[in-house]
Amino acid sequence: MPTYAQVKQRIEKVQQDHLLRFYNELHSQEQDALLRQIDDLDLESIPALVEGYVRNKPAFKVPEDVGPAPYYPYDPASWTRRWDKAAAQRAGEDLIRAGKVAAFVVAGGQGSRLGFDGPKGCYPAGAVTGKPLFQIFAENLLGVQDRYGKAVPWYIMTSPLNHQSTVAFFEQNSFFGLDRKNVMFFPQGVLPSFDMTTGKVLLASKSEVATNPDGHGGSIRALHVSGALADMRKRGVEQISYFQVDNPIVRAVDPVFLGLHVGAGGGGLESSGEMSSKMVRKTGPGEKVGVFCQVNGKVEVLEYSDLPQSLQEQTLSDGTLRFVAGSIAIHVMSVEFVQRLATDAQFALPYHRAEKKIPHVSEKGEAINPTSNNGVKLERFVFDALPLCRSSIVYETDRVEEFAPIKNATGVDSVESSREIQTKRAARWLTAAGVKVPSDAVLEISARTATSAEELAAQRAKLPRVVEPGARLAL
Image (cartoon, rainbow, N blue to C red; front, side):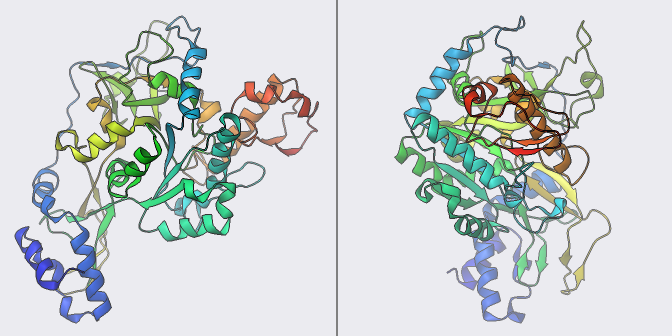
C-alpha cells in the first residue's frame, strides 16, 4: 500500500499535486483507494502526454505515398491474385494441433448502447437461441477442440468496470463447457482524463481520479502486465487470434487465415508472421470503417475520417472502389511481436486524442457536468502496430460469412442486422448442403456444429431435407 508521502512526492514531480486536494476530507477507506488509484497510474508519462496531446493537437497529414493495400481475395481462384487455400489451411491446422494458437477477445465494453445492463459479452446475440456472445465464442472454441483434438486457450480482456461481472457470468454458466484452466481474464488499463485548457488530470470526485479505458491498443500492454503472454509462452503458444466481442459470427480461430499469416498459400504477398488482418469489401465510399492502405511499402489502417473524400471515392476502370479494403478488427499476432510492442519503446503505439465532455469536480469540490467539450481522453489503436511489422498481409473475408457486429440497438450494425446476417449465412450453408430453405425462416448455426458451408455439408445425413415456412431453427 503506497503512503501519502510517496504518492504526494510522485505527483508533485509531474505538477499534478491537486489530485490530493481533498484528501483530508475523505474517510480512511476512500483515502486508501485514492492513493492506490493514483499510484497505479503511469504518472511519469503525464508531462509528455500533456505536451504532446493536450496542449497540442497532433495534426494528421495524409502520406504522399498512399495507395490501396494488396490483399488475398476471398476466392483463391480470383484473377486478381491466385493462391493455394488448401496449403494455407493445412499450415493453420498444423499450428492448432500443435497447441501453438490462442484466442484473444477484447471485451471491455458495456451493453449500454443496446439498452442492456451488463458486459456486452453477456448480451443475448443468437438469432434463434438468444445465446450470449460469450457462449457463442465458447462454442466456437469447443468446435475447434472437437475437430483438431487440441484445446485452444482463451484470453479475455475485460475492463475495470465489468471485470468482476464478466468472471461471475462465466462462473454462473460453468464456463460454457470449457475447461476453466484454459480461460484467463484480465482488465485493460486506463489513462487519466485531462482538462483541455490546463493539462491537469481531472478528478471525477473528491476521492476518484477521472480515467478512461486506454483503447483496444491497450490490449498489447495488458497482455504483458497481466501475465497472459508469459502464460502463452509456458503453453508453447506462438500465435494469437485477436477479435472483438461484438461480432457473433467471427471465426475465433481460422486455420486458413493462420496459414496465410505464417506464409503458406503462395500468392506473392510476403508475411513476416508478426501481424496480419482480415478485411471486407466496403459497401461504398461512405461506409465508416478504417481502410487498409499501403504507405511507403507498409500496410496501415487509415481511419475513415482521415482518408480524404477524393481518395475514398476513387474507382478502378470497372467502377469498383480503389480503396476497398475495410478493417473489421480481426487479426493474428505473434507472441514474439506482441512482447516486442509491449516492452520495447521503439515499438510503442501512438496515442489518439479525443475531445469530450468529462464530468468532474471543481477546485472547490463542486460537481460539474459540462455542456461542451472540456477535456481530452487518450487511447491507442491496435491496428497502429501494423506498420511496425517487417511485412504484413491482409486477407479478404465475405461479409455474410464473418461480419455481423452488434454495436447499435437498431439500424446499421445493430441487433436486427446481425440476426438477419446470421440467418442469411445459415440459409446459404443449408442450401449448399441441399436443404430447401424458405425465405421467412430464422436460422442459427452454432460454431460447434460448423464454421463453414463445407463443414456443414459433411454432416448432410444429419440435416433436415426441408425447413418449414416460418420456422425458427437452431443447429
